[in-house]
Image (cartoon, rainbow, N blue to C red; front, side, top):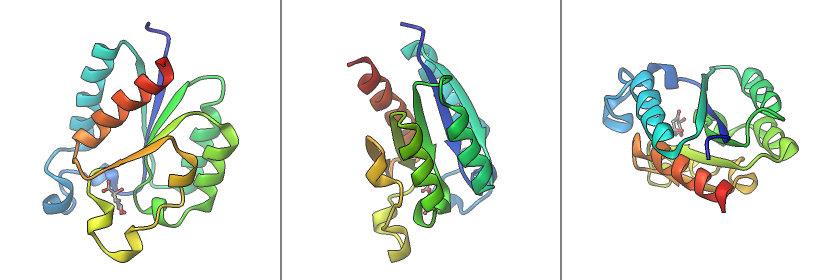
Length: 147
Ligand code: DQA
């Protein structure tokens, strides 16, 4: 039961959570969110590896690096969600089950946020539940991997 390893990828500007537009993204910091995730990971008996980067290529490298190391990926690609064919291709290339999460409900916001390049290559997307989006995403991913 303890053998699953999950990569948690946080994209650009998420290092500023807590400070950044708290009316939209809430007051928790990224460290707070990683701590909540770690508590849930202990409950679920999985291992988490959280990574944050503001650089598209570093996120791509981390997705490639997951091959043979992680069985699942949780990704909040931030603004790259709406722009990055490279991230989408990386997820499709490694073919590791991935869940897309967003703190805010991207469909209630500006039109340019309504399209996700990565949505067609992930198992599913959770959007709009604040930090709970990550917890729900982790639960859904682990359930998927174990069923
Ligand atoms: C976000 C939504 C994106 O549109 C935005 O660019 C982000 C955060 C979210 O978690 O709600 O950086 O992914």
